[in-house]
Image 1 (cartoon, helix red, strand yellow):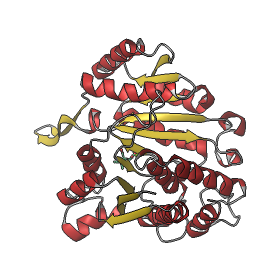
Image 2: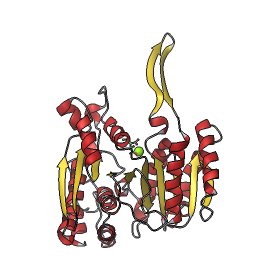
Image 3: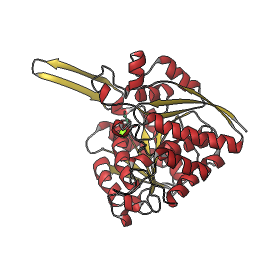
Image 4: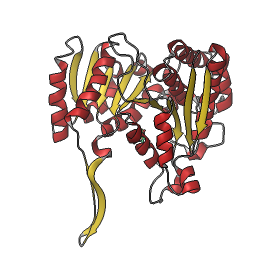
Length: 365
Ligand code: IPM
Ligand code: MG
């Protein structure tokens, strides 16, 4: 029986609804297995801009670093689109502040949901891959990063910079995860154009010698984008830079029928190392979907991405494997039993509200 401190950062739009759902599931787990979960909560994103004039306060970052884990909802909305500092700066600041450089985004086609994807069921069936996205470097953070005005008009610059240290540590996460699965690692880059990608590929080849049991291949980001929806079952683990991972993971969401299904864990190391050792590590857990302001408060939000993110938290940060597996199974069973949130239901049919789906998951724990 453990006792854990969790910082909840609901954010904006549907953020509070989905983190609320995830907390209900966590509470049910805690009650069943006799754990004590203590929550602190804080404003981030647009709601923090309204209250404090900044999307992310220093004390929030400090609280995130001292908590056992952080559960994050989503930030942003039309209200703050023209703010000096955008709500999204909260996510970027937290990722960097916590040093969680490894973003793990699993993409799984759930039996029974193949029909909800716009792709053909026979293409999607059996998809089970993980995107490992570098999260605290690359063009998101590289300097110079600024905009200015010249006599010939406006200009903007972002810098795609990767150091050897950043590349090695994220590739290791990819290799280790692949080692614990089907032993196939696809390193995705743009080495035909970008210097940072050429360094990345060179290091991947060198590091690959340390993992002879893992089959390593290299794909260019553009052709990977095509192959990912053409032959998704050919992938096991993909490892890639911040920007490519951002784009490919939204694309991959189409394979699971809805962005509302995809959880993520952001960590400062490798979870579940192939050596069989289990580490507990600080982590940042968020659904990959956004704040969806258009459906906020309507009961249409799919809580599954947030609930599965909480499941990841149980496993990676709290070291509770059995409980994490129970959450995953409960989600799968709720889906198998026909529960469908608005994003998954066929148009015109009845759907489960956010709370109905949450209850359905909790009943099956
Ligand atoms: C994501 C999101 C974020 C990103 C945005 C909201 C800053 O798209 O987590 O994928 O680009 O990383
Ligand atoms: Mg994204």
